[in-house]
Length: 219
Image (cartoon, rainbow, N blue to C red; front, side):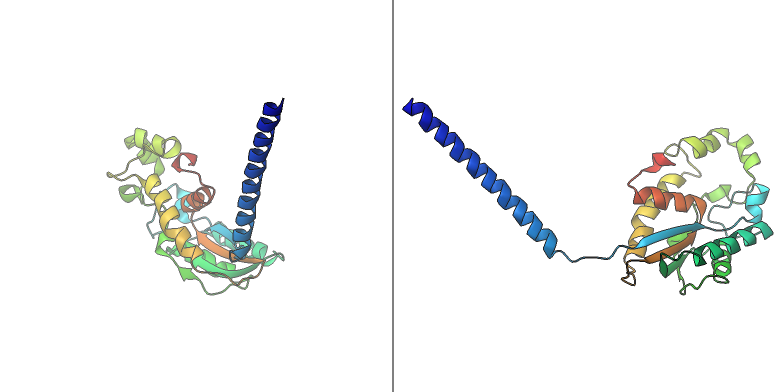
């Protein structure tokens, strides 16, 4: 009986020591978290440009800079500006814009109804690079390169144009170039601060997916 009691006491002491160590570990983690600087959250608004003449006519744009907004695209940009002006729960502290004309046109139209700070132009905010496909009609490419065109729509890892992998390259640019640039820009520090990124459809999709930790397969 004495042996059993001694063994039980040893087990209890061991359990108490383990619990004490766990409590000390949790306390250390809590103190570390309290010591870390508190960085205010910043929201990001990703806005695609308005409709262009190439969108309307079924011509692939990619990162080319030949297209301009249509009347419908101008109306879309103006409506987006009015919508931004009506957002009372945030203040746009920083703006970024693609170097392509269609995005810059959209930004200037936004400013007609929404007070926005001067933009920072980021080359990395350009649209997906589609190389020799740019400027060609989608209907032509579907006939001439059906496998590559189908991969563009459904198999991003297999899509190749002129030896390049456009969607893989786009994801890499969003993850490694765009996000580090806009996050390093800082913010106004207020709880309602936001940054506005005026860019493109495919690039915007890559930004949202990479922010959520999703890879190219999410295309």
